[in-house]
Length: 118
Image (cartoon, rainbow, N blue to C red; front, side, top):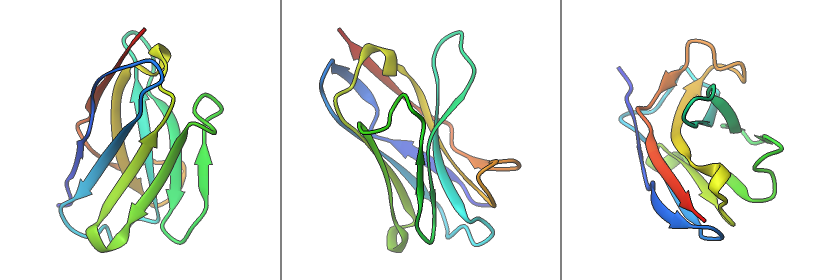
């Protein structure tokens, strides 16, 4: 079964940048889209970015113009470049792969912590 493993989280300061990676153990042949989600303490999981393997991206308003989702299909890896980070971005970030943008029955990673200090 395909496994997704996130990396790149950490503790940064306001205005800093981070790049998260999501490596798949094998090619996810049954999926069409990849996405990044985050969950802050006491809040519901939020979808913040998504990409169709053939192109096309989606961003939540809260991260638009600051975050960029991309893929390296040769490496079976999904990325999230996060710029100008704010304390409100503090959360556990996780990636997922699915057949469509509803991300139902998605393959999900365990997540990586991002903490932004003011």
